[in-house]
Every structure is written in structure tokens, then in C-alpha cells.
Length: 212
Ligand SMILES: [Fe+2]
Ligand SMILES: [Fe+2]
Image (cartoon, rainbow, N blue to C red; front, top):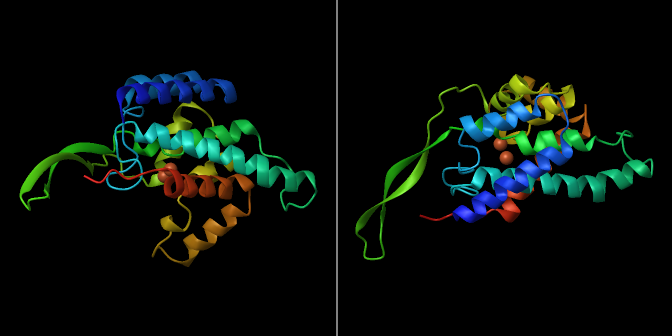
């Protein structure tokens, strides 16, 4: 991603945060992201969606915008018509917090490293790619919750949504009790599934992988 685009995304991200999040601690959290982490320049993955500088911030913007649209066009009309299991509309602030901060666990996670590939003449050439270096392996959603909550007090539904945002991917082989906990979380608040939908659709519908 070009520098200009990274700067535009950063401004858009900060504008969304200021527009939609008024909770105590938001300024401290944003100051932390800007000055103590690589959030605005980090990639979103090593070799999948938006594996490019600035990819993480762009991904969070995509997830937020997608979550807002799903809420506005699908969930809210059903709630207004009395046709949802969850009659209470979600707070926009909660959608913003969950979506814009769900992947803070990725700050400082991806390190640039020299990698090798074959060029069109079948010769080995080196390039700069990313590898994972997790200095606090606390779990994906779990770490995001921990980092956010350090600055800004999350509600229970925000905690559940962020903790379980990887959906079934986070369950894998870890057993039926974890699966039960995941399903129970989905039944506690519509925010839990909303974040999964927005995360999954953004990464697979809108976010390219840079093939090195
Ligand atoms: Fe994630
Ligand atoms: Fe994500």
C-alpha cells in the first residue's frame, strides 16, 4: 500500500473512532496505537488478506463499514419488525469498538524478514515478506480483549464478540466444551455473530492477497 493511502486510512480510522466512540479511555487507547504500536503500518496477515503495509488498519475499516451495513440493512429492520430473537438494537458505539479494535492482537505480531522465491527464469531471488513473532501468545481474540480493556472498559457483549470473532476457526480440535462455550456466546448478543460475519466477509470478499 502506498504511503498516501496509509495516511488516508489512518485519518479515516481516527475520524470513525472520534465520531462513534465516546467511552472514557478512547483518547489513551488511540494515543497508544499511534505512538506505541505499528497498528497503522502493520499488515493484516503474513500471506493471506491484506498482507501489505497498512493492511491491518484497512482491514479494521472494512470490518467496521461491513458490520454497520449488515446491522442497518439486515439486523435492524428485523428487530424493528419484531422478528429478531434479539429485540434490543445494538449500540453503534459497541459495533465501532468491536469492529475497529477486534484485531489489536496483531499489533507487533508480524516482523519483516527476508524470504526466497523463484523468478520467471526459475532462479532463486530474495524478497521482504512477513513472519509471525508473537511475544505475548495469549490467544487471538483474548489478546485483543486484554489490550483494549487496559485502556477502555469493554462491556460483556463486546468482550464476547471480540473473544470469539474468529468463529469456528478458533475452535478447531480444542473439544466440545469450547464449542459449547462458543455457541453460548453467539446466543448472548447479536454483536457476536455480527462481528464474525463482518470479519469473514471483509477478508474474503474485499481484501486481496499480495502474491510475492
Ligand atoms: Fe482476527
Ligand atoms: Fe479481523
